[in-house]
Every structure is written in structure tokens, then in C-alpha cells.
Length: 393
Image (tube, rainbow, N blue to C red; front, side, top):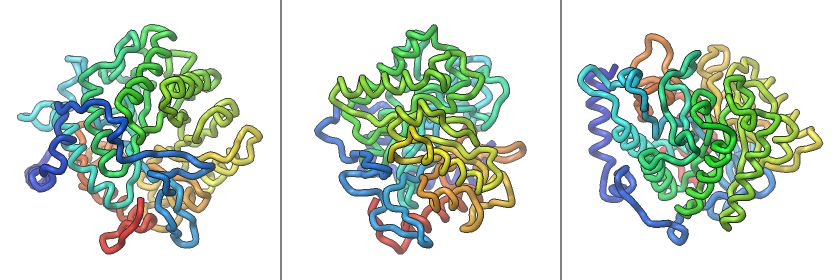
């Protein structure tokens, strides 16, 4: 899957970037005590804006007349802690015929790439304890990728890898949007109590680590019909939002909590009312004007009070040639024109190689393909993080 040139580039970048400044963060085996007094990055929400360390993100930034200050540009990078516990499917993710799948390598290479993403203006990485389809989109999902055990407890190996990523994000001034459930894996939990226990355990883990740079996403696309547990679906998912909010306050560690919906779907009133920020997806939305309508619809709902609107998954600008990842006519641009944050979702299509996609496993976490470069170029332009610019978070 990985050609010789890709190997050389990856090796060179790894050697150049894994320096003492990141040696602890880049080691998934490195253990750090609770970091309540050591946190470098604190994310907060005031009205419809995100703040980092008391300052609005992208402070003062205007792009083509659009206000960028207060937005949270993000990318769906959910495979950062991926593993497959199913011995019948783990061979699918081999790096090559001679290099088997290695979850520790995957996380190490994720850590190496993070400073490059940050230098282009990316402030948020979207992760999930149950990942996402390692094929991009899948009908059947027989693999077993879950940081959550059937009883709702958290697997130490997954959480160790997650810790190394959040630690590095904290050092870089980045935010982690941490999802808990994914519809391809939620069936592994043994009943509703295990689902609730997983939420409580996740909140407690974040609080115990002292992380202030974490946002919670209860579930990815809660309106997906594949979810086995009713409490994760739109009609009742607000119960889990409230559970996470209440638990974090009990821990004296308030966390902002939300849940996302399928591409093109508008969140339900109960979620708009209870969530601390609003999550939507742009997958399948061919017309950027439809994205604008979705954003406007949320703001017009009687349940809505000023809070950020974030698209944290959207593949449309690269899947549909009529959009493209330039400065005109795509979902990214129309979202920021309507003061909504936007998130890049990229996977490997049939016939593409190792360098493509951030969701398909095994992942090349570097900015290694034409469309990755196109996204990060536009991102840097919008946020003012070009190579010759000096910009605040």
C-alpha cells in the first residue's frame, strides 16, 4: 500500500520532528500524572464563539469580509487511536506485505503530524473512542475498534494512546473534540446502563487527567439507523448530553457537550436546546446553499440560544468537482460566510494509495495528497496562518 517514496518521506519527517521537545508526548507509553495545574490550553465558549486561554480563536481575523474570530476549524481524524481486536479482520490494515498493522505506530505518526496541521491554522482534531469506518463508508463493519468494553469501562491501551494525543494537543494550543459512540461499534455495549457508564467513565477520565482542551461529542451521527441503543438516538440522546454535563459539573470540571447528525440533517429541537454547541455534517450536501439553509434553520429555532455552530465532518468539497477546495462555491467557504466552523473529512477511494485520506486505515497522517494540500492551503489562507504570517490561535 505504501510506495518507496512515501516511506522515505515519512521516515525523514519522523526523524526531523521527533525531537526532545516532543519526546514525552510522542511516546504512547509515556505516563503523566494528573495535569490539572499543568494545562497549557483551555477551551471555553462565550456566546457563539470559542476562546482559547481567554482569547477568541483567530483573534481579529477577517477573510474576504467574513469574521473568522471565534471559529474552530477542525478535521475528522478519528483513527488516531484505532486498533482492531478482531483477529479475522486485523490483516486488512497492514501497512504493506511486510509491515503488519501497528496501533502504536499509527499514534506515533499522528503525533508527528500534529505540528504541521497546527501551523496551517487547524485548531481542533476530532477523535472518537469507537473510531469511524476505516474504509470511509462501509455497509458491514465486522472489525472491533472500541476503547469501550462491553460493560462501559475504558480499555487502558486505547486511553494511553488517547492521552498522548491530548497531551500533545495541549502543548500545541489545540483542542480535541472527543466522540464517545460510533454506530458501527455501539452494539458491543451490553445494554443502556453500559452506555451510561461509558459516558460517565469518559467524563471522569477527562476530569482526572485535568484536561481543559477537550470538547465532548456524545455520538457521531446519532440519527443513523444503525445505532442499537435507543438512548443514543435523537429522541433520547439529550439524556446523555445532560448526563455528561451534570457529571462534569459534579467533578468540578465543566465540559462542553454536543452530538452530531447525518450529513444534511438539522439537529432536533431537544438537542439544540440542551447542547453547549451545535454539530452538523455536510456529507452529501452538493449545494453550498443547502449548508447555509441548515445553519440559518438552527438559528431560527425557538430552542436556539447563542452558541457555536460547528460542522465537524464534510467530504463534499472534494467528492463533488463542482465545489472543489478553492476559494469559491464550496461548503467550507459558505459555512464561514454564515459564521459556522467547518471540518474536513477525507477518506481513500477505490484505487487510491496510502497517501490519500485521513480516515482510511492505515493512515498517512502527513499532508501527503493533492486534496489534503488543497484543504490546508485554503485553511491557512482563511485563518491567516500562511508561512509568512504571524497569527494568534
